[in-house]
Length: 391
Image (tube, rainbow, N blue to C red; front, top):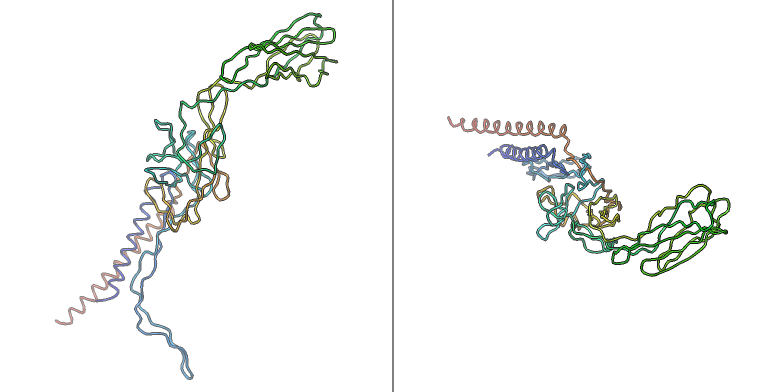
């Protein structure tokens, strides 16, 4: 049988594979985080009809004479180039600008993906569309240990922020220097205990000939006193701090000009316990929770992975990959680490399929298929001529 017949058949097969790969790229043109693939061809073994000969005295050398036996698919490579950004405005959507991968857990196995469309499930876990749970490090008292093992990121609506005992308070404003001696100005500061119970800290400012005497009385029985002096409206007492039990009241920013009485409570550092109301994603991958008591705490941090050879990853469906022996083991890191990239919220990475290139590949594959089909029909005509010799 003619060798060209089988060469044509092999050409049909590989160009059909090229059509399959190109068709899949076009089909996924709007798939979030999809990476396009390309088919690579390679010739097969060649039949030796005459070997090479070295040159000798009086005669030159000769090159080998070989007849190719067809073509085969050498490999299908994945293009991990960055896709364009698509703004969604959803706080749970994330995009990696760089070479990193999100880590998702499903069925006890880790998968790696560039698709950052996550949503909260009924258990408060961030999950992908196919149910993969986003992996990272949970925070303990607002501190994340990125050296530990990764686990499921959980943002339970029942997460609470612990109460904080008040240790410092600040008053600001003006005490009128033209007030009569004996004039009293009173303010109440709401403070908190370690159990979150609030109480009142009563502050009394009494005008004296030398300035103002300050007395503080805590509802738990603690008492503190100090005196303030002013010159040309500016506080000369340094430091101006009133200690009432374990609470230090800062009075450094008070002024003493005439005609104004604007003394107010600027704030204190204690709070009651709070319930999680919302969360935001920071550029370093930290998920920061906002609580009903006004506090903001880090709840978890997103983990990213990189590979020595991303092209060695195996596609596992659902826009995910699994590590192989040729990809190397996953190297964990955080957004901003070298070789991983940065993280943006409210955006998704679009497919990196180039439609103009893919349609060109369709034409190339179609013409290659037609040309190899022509090889088969021509070989068939030659065989027909051989059969007709018997007539």
